[in-house]
Amino acid sequence: MPPEIPRDRELSDDELEAAIVHVLLNPGTYQPGIQNAEEMLERLGTLDGSAIGEVIRANDGPEALEMRFLAILWRWVGVGLLVYRGPTFLLAPGAQEFLEDHADEAEVVLNRGGLVRRLRERCPNLDSVTERYGEFAQESFLAGHYQAAAVMIGVASEAALLHFVPRCEAALQKLALEPRQRESDRGVALLNWIDATVTQHRRELVRAVEGVGEENWIGDLRALLGIATGIRLTRNEAGHPTPHVVSRDECRNMLGLFPRLAEALFVSARAFEKISADHS
Image (tube, rainbow, N blue to C red):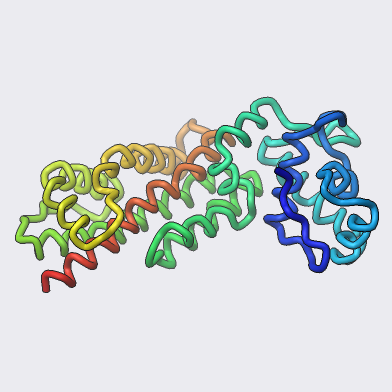
């Protein structure tokens, strides 16, 4: 179904982007691709001529709406979603599959505030460091600075791990379970500690998390640590003088997958805080 288009107020960025994606994926009897904002509104099929005029006026006129429309399209050209064959913007090879099969990740990656918005939605008690470096990562990605984006998402990942680990340690102590000694707060040490701890105490942690009525991510954590490992290794390669060059697709994948890891860590951390409080 085409997205709803308000007539009495300015379109938000999300609404405008959703309308563009719908038209790109549903050409109907039109030629593939898209050229301008008014054509986009016509092709949605939900607005007659007078309604289109109302939408344009609510968005400060045709020139202002067209500028916003083109800014989005050229940004998507930069991240490989579209190609420009004047005067038409077309889906790049593989872009349709990405939008259709990975719509959740596409929303995170392509919207300017998509990553931070997703983190805020899914990560209770999201800390400012994880949020800030997630925002830096997306800004770098949309500007085409993939090496910098890989480093920034690596820092965001490490910040999420640092949020999780002390809360897990505190919960283990309250449950009269012996936490393992950590070598350091470096990324590899944190990952090794979480992997070993969840493996050793999985049954007790799952039971305790269920006891405080929290969503149970413990069983999935070990698999999700693969995402963190991939981010860490890519960050190391990108942040040191090595021959490795981070590709756009590699960076896009990391941005799309990171919220899954972050959600598991932050939801589990909230559960651990409840466990500590309940056993105090």
